[in-house]
Length: 208
Image (cartoon, rainbow, N blue to C red):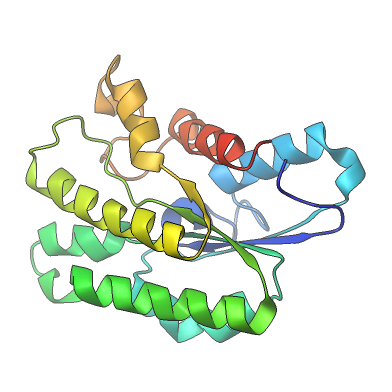
């Protein structure tokens, strides 16, 4: 298991990470982050880990940049877990919101700058999770675009020696046996079983 005793693990991202952590499900949310925390603590109670959720629904990488100092760097993580990109892509497929989409070159440039700032300032290790679309048809336009952004995350993870969580691959595994609607009503916001798919991928990636 990669996590060590007394460490502080900070998750940051969009609504998939947020999951009500600012209101009805404070402070961890009721999604994958809460599941990861629950299973790691249950399996490794001797570690005494501290968990922090800094997801905010609707965020793109631009929004992360605006709050990075307060919500990532100032938290002084030992491990910083980042999942962002779904809204960066989705807005381009949302009528009237196309201007809010983040082009892939800006996405990569901004993500790299944010991660470099966090690592340089805090010395944290990184866990990077792919953006995903719960859609089996790889030729569907939004899914094809999502795969391009996920490839960026994989490349960035390699360059930063980060743990890479292949969330799209995790959903592809279950989509081979079931429809998208079993996991999310809109292909983006998972129900609890969908969050369990993400959490399972996280746990495997960190060896927990």
